[in-house]
Image 1 (cartoon, rainbow, N blue to C red):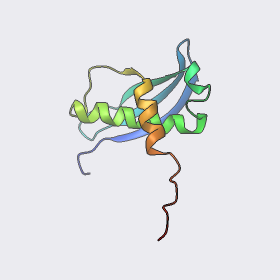
Image 2 (image 1 turned 135 degrees about the vertical axis):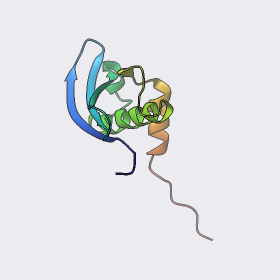
Image 3 (image 1 turned 90 degrees about the vertical axis):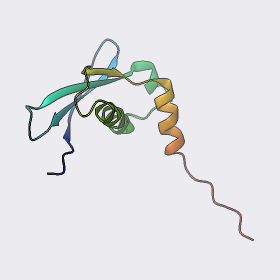
Amino acid sequence: MNGQPTIQYLGFRPSSQGREYAFSVRETSCEPCEYFVTIAHEDFQGRVRFQDAPGICSQRLQRELAAAANHPLETRYLITEAELAEYRAAHAPRTPGRRS
């Protein structure tokens, strides 16, 4: 194994804050840990598509793991508007360039 944890998406459930996406993180030297990343209900009103949400949450979890040597102190995270804007910008359709 390359020292990187294995992240497994477990699914989502509705919560009072929004949709909560669950992930299991496994390393060879530790027991699996579960992490939860939430996207607020109102963010699904035109800011994020349901099918993109697991990917957005996975990216956030990967950043948290990288920043804490794969052992963050928190197990629950809330996606911010800035993270949604970053995701939209990175996945916006490209406009074709002008040909000379």
